[in-house]
Length: 218
Image (cartoon, rainbow, N blue to C red; front, side, top):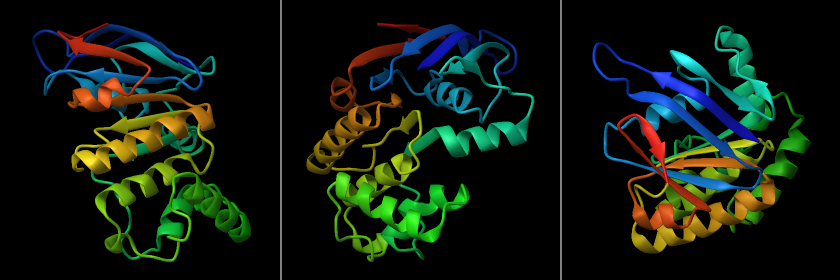
């Protein structure tokens, strides 16, 4: 599903931050990447999402290489194919939970009835049935992160990218969110890539890799 070939990125003089990074992630597989702060984990996610450009190498999703030269095409590709889960949730406080979840569908031009139906179904799938009319500020941290997972998956992306998804949660909420994420990845059949400092979060993934010295290793 996701294939990274020979990816490299250097910032300024000195050793590259990422050096000949290669990785394959199957459909329905959840891979965690751990490493020290500054090791390049977030840079790797940004390259895979097409938010930054590599100095060398390529990223392929379902056999198709990202075209880093065309910003408009990359933006449309992200809108259709990628779901993001962030540490800080990034739910819009002035929208209801259902409206937040439906945002990717609105950006793709889906009809209101379809947006409402799919958002409700996705909220139910993450254990938030009946929460759609509430505002994000009335939710717990764990509930907000589950809503963010619903938003990331509502448009059926083939690639799910998670950046420290449990970083703002206590242990009980983190466990609930990791359960939700594991179930969501399997149901969606997406390739999932998560970067984290948490060994507990990483242990829930199907496979754990370490990024150090610009290289990925088991």
